[in-house]
Image (cartoon, rainbow, N blue to C red; front, side, top):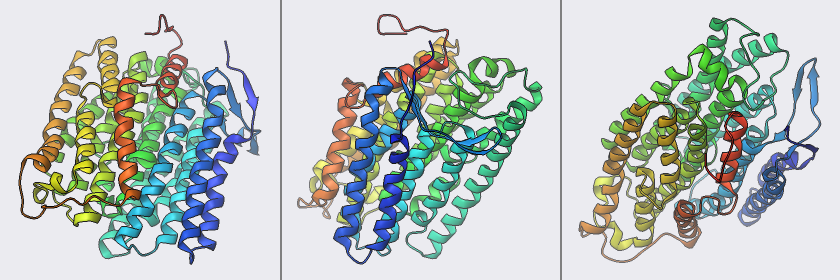
Length: 504
């Protein structure tokens, strides 16, 4: 049965509220308290708007606003389905904690250009909502490129030579890939007449030859895989670690790389669909690229002494879990991939929050210099250790749920070798993250002899995200029904599989 579609303007308000806040932040830039108040108010307003739509989406309804017609067959439109709600609920919720953390970090670091920082951050969240709620390829692309441009000032925040160089690299990767994405979109509109997302896909062999469809797929995947950090398109991501830590959290957990992973989900599940991809044989290639990225990025991460760079290469691998899951074209593969967007976000934002707290409090950035830091910052390092175990896939932490479903999805596809990849990655993740916590608590150093955590504006968000990583590992539907949304999305994409007795 087709879902009921309701006309509703809340998706538009969810996009606009932080855009309005960005303008107010710029106007009141000389008054820091007021400027930061707009950030907090917009964050709470956005999460309230998004979560007010959640009950309707969980009941099987779809919310949309009337389209803005650009030309025949071309329109800009917002629509809220289960996949979009999954991403929007995640991003809006994490923006609240990131906003408080950002204020603490910027004050603690005495950063310059704070007005531009908070304004650009707000625009990024507007773009993220637009990506989540885009009803078609064109709308998705518009907000996708807005996100690229809005992130650039954040990457070059320091305005030094290294930051400018990293910013140029970021733009070169993302803008070039974006143009390839646009070619694929235009081609799709030419052969179909529209680009409206449809669960299970709207393209078929009736629209074009196998070669043409394969080419369109490659163009779209390059356009989205760059932001997701899939190798060999990942070079901008470690370079962007020159940005302030809250920006790194934005890049890795809230918006940019998640937008790339979400884009791959839309292309596979809502443009091509499992049936067509099985026929043209390109999903298997993407799955192998993802598997390669998972292992190689983990090996590179082990060699990084700079904590943020180690976390960056961890993200490169962890986001390819999502790519691998949806490339399996199985119900549990889609479920695991979509829930890993959630799992990785909570765990990785915790790790980056901890890295920023360490930097602000001790000015340390290199792992080799953090021996015994747990004595000074026990709460921060406990949170770091929890998230590290979660990234490795330990039970009772949120990462286990997504990775368990990914492994089952691989078996469902009859591809047990991918299970070996997941196990190998878990062992490598343990090797490059867990020792940081071990060094913090079980090694000694004369540098860290007394207690001294970061400010509460930074510490409380760390505690919240680390706690949620544990809670969601036991109660995966806690708060926003993320697991149910992932199940409903996977069901809608792979329509031939029915949910029976609460399991697949």
